[in-house]
Amino acid sequence: MNTEKNQRNCPVCDITLAQKSIAPVVVDECNQCGGILFESDEFRLAKDAEDSDLEWMDFEVFKAEDSQAKKSTRNCPMCHHAMLAVSYATSGVEIETCADCKAIWLDKGEFQKILTALDSEANAKGVIGHFKSTFQEGVEILNGPESLVSEWKDFTKACQFLGRRCVVENPKLFSAISVVQKVI
Image (cartoon, rainbow, N blue to C red):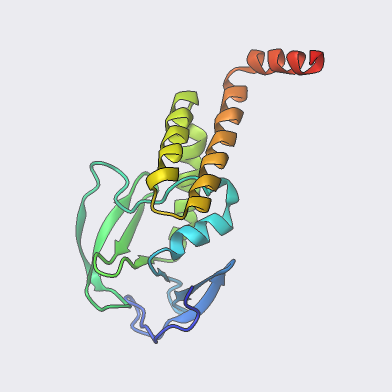
């Protein structure tokens, strides 16, 4: 991670952004409006550090198949190109992202809103949804965007969530497994 960053200005207030730590990740934040700039992989790292239960959930700006990007009125604080505005899934958050350098700009409070939306998405999935997610995480071990170790961690976390969901939706199955474990 690059801890020494070039001076960047807020795309809203046009003042110099200050460095802020979100766990081990150093991001740029506007002291006036509270917006946060994430470079390429910083959002994923900050999300994983803020809520380890969400590590296995991939954050994709263009998540929904019907998501549409429109040109934002803001320019990227890093490369100064026009940013795109994308509504992120069911979070109610409109993310500004740069197609050129992959930076993400979030207004004040939007980072937490996305974490809440990801948490709600994970909790709303039934057994079949968690099975599909677990299978996808298994595929990503071989060809995912993250490192092999990171993808393996995501897969094991997805397996844990699948197991929990099975128990929640099938309490009789849990009781049967408990009885078998006592016998063995």
